[in-house]
Amino acid sequence: MELNKQNAELVLKEASASNPGAWTDHSRYVAEACKNIASRCKNLSAAQAYLFGLLHDIGRYAGVSSEKHLIDGYRFCMERGWEKAAQICISHAFMIQNINTSIGKFDVSDDDYLFMKKFVADAVYDDYDRLVQLCDALAMPTGFCLLEKRFVDVTIRYGFHPATIDRWKKILEIKASFEKQIGGSIYALLPGVVENSFCQEEMFP
Image (tube, rainbow, N blue to C red; front, side, top):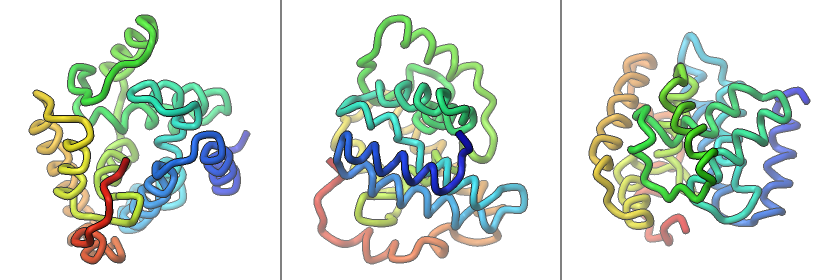
């Protein structure tokens, strides 16, 4: 199956029906952030970036889970021949390429854990991987937000992990790298970021 906007939006719609939740709106905002930032980067396709952002959490189609959604998404995309999207289904959670930096629970089999451990260590990241890692931290289900708001949101839900500070530092490093590429602030490309960052909506469930 060709990876294009029509097919990606169709599978997200079907996944949302299978497991309704705030994750689908979050995915749409991640996709928009990816597209907007990539459109200002010489070596990235805004259209491709949008698709990778839209599908990064597609593994949630299988139901409520923690790190299992990563490998579920990987397999979902690989079955359709979407190899780069499959990689990003796992890589978006590992801005630091070490399985021990995960903040979630490995609700997977031993074999799947070992597969993910090797996959993360061996993966060759490019700016699409890094862009989705960044944009995942810029999007709530209600819209775009400051990185610091999403950092707090995730920490409230998952708790403080030994790797939390290092993960934050890595995301801030990625942000600085993209801002150097675009010659300005990423927030200028995220409509409504101020309003959404300071509203009093419930956190991402």
